[in-house]
Image (spheres, helix red, strand yellow):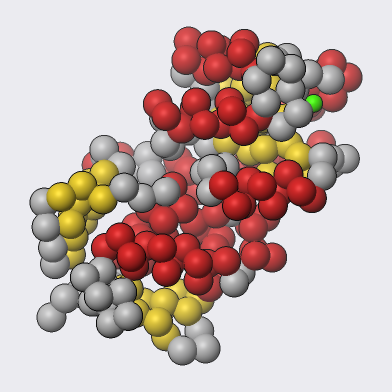
Amino acid sequence: MERLIAVVEDEEKIRGMIRSYLQNEGYEIVEAEDGTTAVELIKAQKVDLVLLDIMLPKKDGYEVLKEIRRNNKKLPVIMLTARAEEIDKLLGLEMGADDYITKPFSMRELAARIKAVLRRTYFDYDDGDQDDEMLVRGELEIDQGAYEVKLAGEPVNLTPTEYKILVTLAEKPGRVFSRLQLMERAMGEAFVHYERSIDTHVSNLRKKIEKDPANPEYIHTVYGIGYRFGEKK
Ligand code: CA
């Protein structure tokens, strides 16, 4: 199946290079050169992935990403960044980008990232029945079809990263995941340099789902390694 990729980039030369390379790789491409057009385009077309530049006219990439996430938590988005501060901001704001790539990048690297994100997204989350699978663990219910989490019947509001960490752990109770493994699964390979930030996400997640975050029932620390999901006994 041909995947449709939205390329959102105001620099025509870069956009053109991305378009011809990806078309050659067998993808279909739609393009937008500013943030407002991008939001409209993504609403109107069923795209499979978005390549999103940060510095854009009319609406910047952060704003576009926020609008995408308001309607669609699953659509994979790879940010195109020009500076390290933009990466810090992306991480800091917890905006739910699936990956980022720093300019200047090679087309081959870009294509590899796209392939990895598509594989992860559509294999993990759109794989037939698995997509709608309901995970019930103690008082915790995770509805993977609706992307919703409830604790004792009450909705819990998680960020996309917290959600992915929780699903990764809860799918395999008892299995120990290293920080690196959780980071790869929840945030993408590009984020592995920020391995320690997984602790912050887990700590925030615990505040939302644990009755006593200091004495967790669900997400247990495995000292020196990472984390493990343990059902309430
Ligand atoms: Ca730009």
